[in-house]
Image 1 (tube, rainbow, N blue to C red):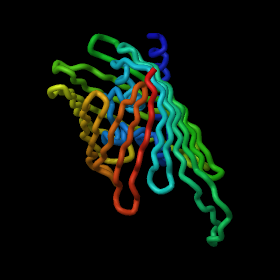
Image 2: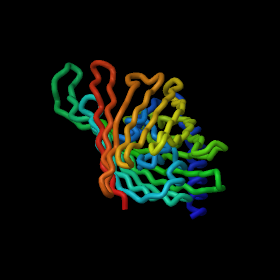
Image 3: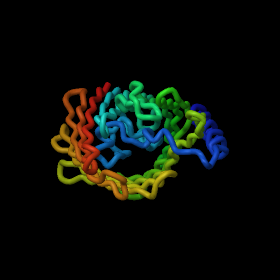
Image 4: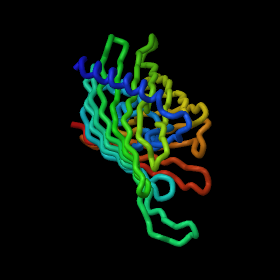
Length: 300
């Protein structure tokens, strides 16, 4: 397995070098890669990296899922802003010292009018964004985990389309404090071809996150805080918490700082036998509507 992560790291480094050669005047695209795709992430201020219920945590922090133990398949759907909808299928297999993950993401925008220069309606088109991702993470030392994702993404507007190859690299380390860890990652490193003769940059992001768990009586509280520095935006931060009640119910809430159009979020998770049902609600600024996110996971 070590040779797999070595190969991923080498591919990642090659993509980093190629990314440096992209025209500085190009626009940022593929921004759907920075949108949380399932209700656990949505409820926890867009992250939830250290939550074992978040089967998509490795998409944000490639090393984080390796410290858990589960095998699951999950599906999620989010009614996003306007007519947009985000759907994802994810497989995740964690064994405490390694992790393998596969994910398919699809963001659709509904029908958009196509008009000519004088405003006459010519018809409609349906833009779409798709990404397929794979992950491998490994426990390097008793306290250090490393992981990498390799992804292919495709975006299509009307007649124009673009293809991208990119990677995410992450490290997670346990700290001296009980049930706590710190994570760092670089996401969306890669290259893409032009979209309708326009160069497109991937939405590169540098992330730093911290987590601490607390046992309160028979209940468990997990608190996460972090910050992100996107290449196309100012520094952002988040604070989120989840409390587990009666071993079956999880209540979640989060707050995003310096986010363009949303701040608070909330949701819950319910364990029923081998199934986990999740829901999240994210209110956006007036005029943009609210986000409702649903998901179901099966634990093997």
